[in-house]
Image (cartoon, rainbow, N blue to C red; front, side, top):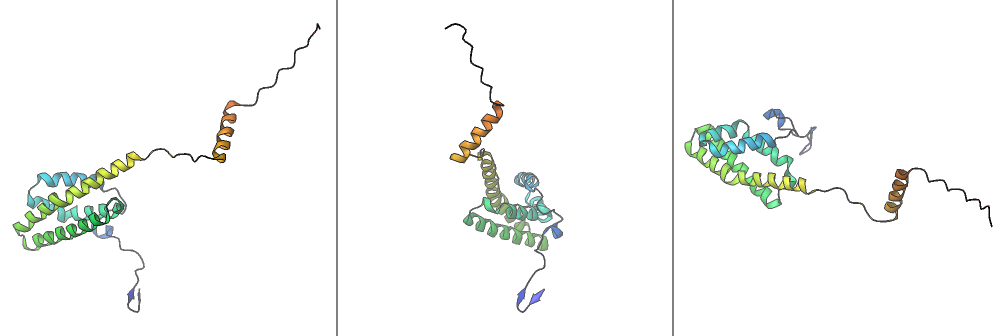
Length: 167
């Protein structure tokens, strides 16, 4: 829909239509496998893998975990992803061997360490969360006393006084 000079999208852009990936699906497992494979593969294999689904997986992971990166790291990662995409396009169009080597250098040397540190930080953050802490105050004390009395059951009946026969 177009209004004047402003273009208004009726629905937000969804890259999953182009990549075949389900939006919001966990990509971390596939991404870990791919990152590990990139360190051992040749530059040609890395370039092919990046062109097939690596670029989409990396972008999806960064979009889903944007809060895990500081602003400077996120900006640096965005620039590195653009640089990797440019090398990938050069390799795809020209089949240049140098482009594949530069792509592997950017991916393995710069992008992979950033992604792995974010994954480790996310794991530490999830493990660091403890149980919810109660707020001290009269309402908490009243709730605790009601819960304790409910666990004890009904109050015990008082025993009748003993009858004294001799005085």
